[in-house]
Length: 266
Length: 295
Image (tube, each protein chain N blue to C red):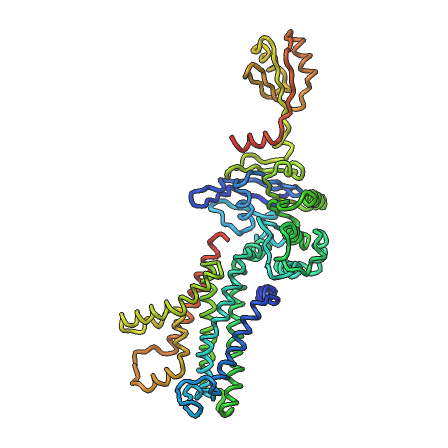
């Protein structure tokens, strides 16, 4: 396992695109949230003296949910990175070369999953560190850790997005078209289809779609506040269900990709 | 003698196109085994299958007396179709990845880069290399860790004449040091110069396989003419050195190996036939190859 991860590391350690995309994630997440928490970016009008609704949530215990929501946006950078790293293998035909040199097809596949797993652990740890700093600054450290379960949701979401990006790469093989489809799906198709399904079936079934199920774990904090003021809908799925559905999708990605790579020509 | 590679009834099709039809042969240890065929005959498909990047529809193969194929590939240096490397990494970094996959010593990178004349460019990115340099790097990569077997697909592709000669002599030299080489080529001349064994493919069919001197033997053709052609044919049939005799276009054609014209002339004279025409034609390998692959 270490051996496979080391091979992946050799492929990325001198790859500028890798560092740039990881950098975008690592810089933008705290910077963006710093902006919001300081009232540079406001939601809720009133000029300098106005109320800044979204800056309320940087103390423990809400900081995790707040950062988690923004992670669900910025994780796009890491997902694109996965697309580029996977489609590179096809473009350079190094997928074949790795096999020719002695990796088994399964090892090649697992190496990429190990990379995804490592990046998801990285993003989670990074949110943890960022959240601890914000929480200590805007609130009382004695309330640490607060609603730490949201950190677990961040991990599930990271794995879901990057796993999805990887499987798309295996099917489309070219970075441009894969990134295009990833955006089209995650930004437009899924919300349209999801809402349509919910409306048609008068249920929450649309929320179970591949990426949406994880997005549901980390809703926009204000929406959540508003929702909590409304009468509670007892039929709404719980976070546990969304975690289970997300993990189920990740397993489906794994099995689909595995079948494809083991059976087809390279 | 042990077999390095044996194939049994390998078949593969792409849709309607049958790329390989029941191909079986064995590569003996210590040979330079050429897979010869025109473009599109299935050479690369065949190598792709034995290197596990393509899946055969039928049949099986085994490396190094049935060694686990993943382990076997680590002992095999391969160059398939095009040089495949990470464009954004240097020659040195690319070879490190190959070395780690093959579980070979890191230090060997310098040796192979020197062997293919790329040591000075070891820190240049792969994307800055010319076609010939890419090909050299691929050959260097195949040599990493002293493989027991080399699999080379059109190894002299893209090289200049000096490079071609260099690679050919390198292949022979490596073979002398005990490495078995399996190489695909569409150049008959190359196979004849370099290989000890050959398998000839034509549109997925294995036409022949065996030792080069047997398969690609130089068959002589002799043209003869006399007043009575059928009588001439009859007496020639008694000569054991002639393998085939036929009459056409007013000549008798006789085929055989290392034919001695003087002897034939004398023989006909003794039998009372005066030859009005006697001409030896060496059959070129090219025409033999074309005959084999086009009929």
